[in-house]
Picture 1 (spheres, rainbow over the protein chains, first blue to last red):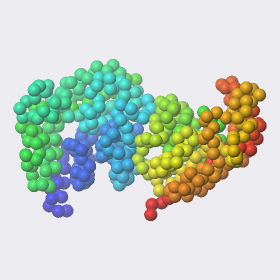
Picture 2: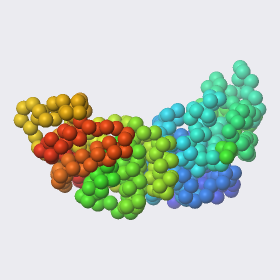
Picture 3: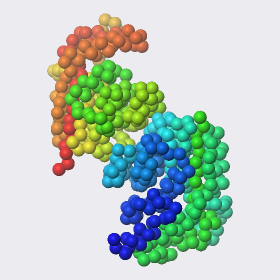
Picture 4: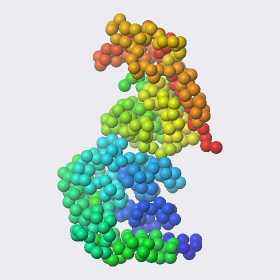
Length: 254
Length: 231
């Protein structure tokens, strides 16, 4: 292992995430599409009832790192569904990871999912639900009916621990306009009568994870350069006042 | 949804190598009878894909049949399949390929979903012999019951040789079998008689045409091809 690889491995090791820490940092970098999805997946799994063999929809799976993690760590059967990343790309990754018997890549738009009602034992979504799920009707029209009654849906999305004022605070670029607060998400899900919201809180240490992620990405280049990584600079100024994650888990009523 | 899907599936599988645990696409599965049969009889994992019958309907049938762990219903258009290239160990199409696969270029798109070295098998209503000139009169005339057998859909009827050529010329596969079912017309006829007896449809003109034809032109063709291994 070179010094650089060692540094990367150290940065990716997180005492709170023993499962995620086992994965090859280079693999995580090659396939990343945002703050370490392995940490997010592990955080979500801690508060969900996932049992081996369950049929799970991983909606907006991106490069399927979360799907591979779910299959390896929890022995779930995962439908790795995405609109941006093609199933053929993900299939190669899935086969290389040796989980081709239980991770199935599927190409799908979140508003026309090709599955049957009550097909899934659980639905999860990591860092993607905000791209398609903020419409108040989304749960009813598109998502929840795919979940069996009594099954759980869990998501982690970027969210603000408090209401985000508009215009945005000076230290935040306009591109953050879409961030909703944790309270907003909780309210949004509680409105839907067919769902028991079991948890809707700020992800503990969410901001720290986000910062640490950027430090990890910057390491190969000899540390963060603010002019290149505007997001990290803003995160540091923010100190977790507005930037973090929401973690929601709900159960479809029987 | 057509001549007995179970008979046709069983006949097709005689020429296919299906082993437990294989991932099989059942394209155009209709009400998933063929998918359930494949799961029960061969222990394969079946992706039951259809455009017209909704996955929710099929999921209920699949659960009732006790094969929820092996058959996964999916809504799909044959020309925009949501799967990865090389995902399937085998593909079967029972009495559906004529609705999407007669295009010269379709096979080139379709074949890539089976892994190299995997089989694709179809069974289709077909011509047992080609005719010279116009469609034989006994198929196009008004039958004693007043109906006409030969409707617009019948243009999808082709011979085994026609089908073989459609796939073999692509050089993407080895066509391992392309043959007509012996006395296939009797199976077809029996299906119409069952439907007529069940009272869901009269089928009088179909029965009359098949009886007049006696397999001279009408029957079933199965074709099985193996995708070339990558060189």
